[in-house]
Length: 128
Image (cartoon, rainbow, N blue to C red; front, side, top):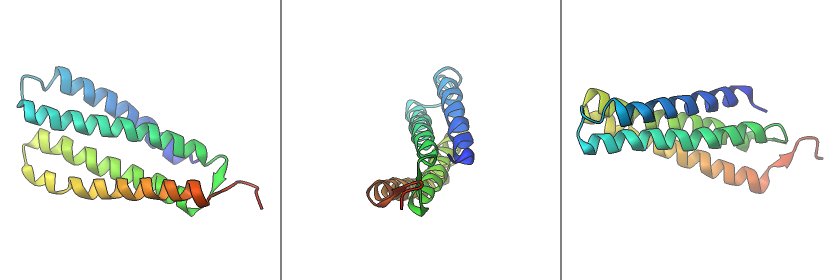
């Protein structure tokens, strides 16, 4: 098990819940419907990837290898950059943050690809 990824997964889940609630109750009358949808996308992606990181962290208890580690860290980085840039875009009303979001998306794609490769080529701990 990768304890660091487990902690990050839990924190991402916490932030996704808190930010989702904040968007629904705290931002609803303060930002446009378009910006609120951007906020919701950030919260949803963070929540989905919190769950994915949890699975990757727990898989590490039974499987080893570079691909699984790359998957976990790329997913963590990608979720932080993707969702974080969307949150900052809404909070600061600075469209330039939207230019950062695709880098997070690219890291997420790398993470999912590495996870697929780890599933195909990885081996169980202790397997010869």
